[in-house]
Length: 196
Image (spheres, helix red, strand yellow):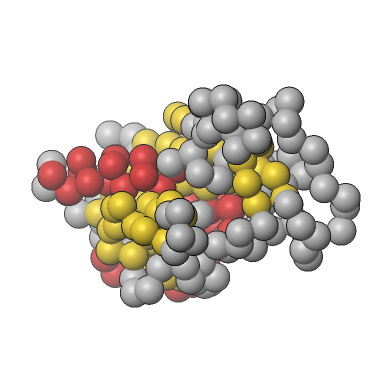
């Protein structure tokens, strides 16, 4: 049976991790071995989890769903973990934060038939509206791409937000993990920040 690679993408706040957890949980219910991984740089959740979250009105974080996961920082660590765990389903969250080695690592997992299904979630565009890190290639090598939208935080139109708006000057292309200096905008309300 061919390995299915699927990508869930969209802006911040679109529910990418929520959808990743939903799909992975269905596989767990079906009795499959599931391994969830995320980049070690993502330290928003205490412990070894991927989690869906929203900012509450007091500015704190509430997590509505979470799934046990392992943080990885190198290709060697990633492949060793996959080989050791022998999952049937591999769930990769925040893929845009991985270095480009994640592309060759995913290709290797597919080539050697280590898993049956790979589900990848991540931001497809950065705050400048440009393809984000490894995401364009991951989208190209997948059989299924699901693009989610969010509510525009400016005009409040539902399911039209597709871009991440940077609200302050920071450093580099990478979205700062867990930063409050970003919001979601539709194409009409979005303005690109100055190049840094």
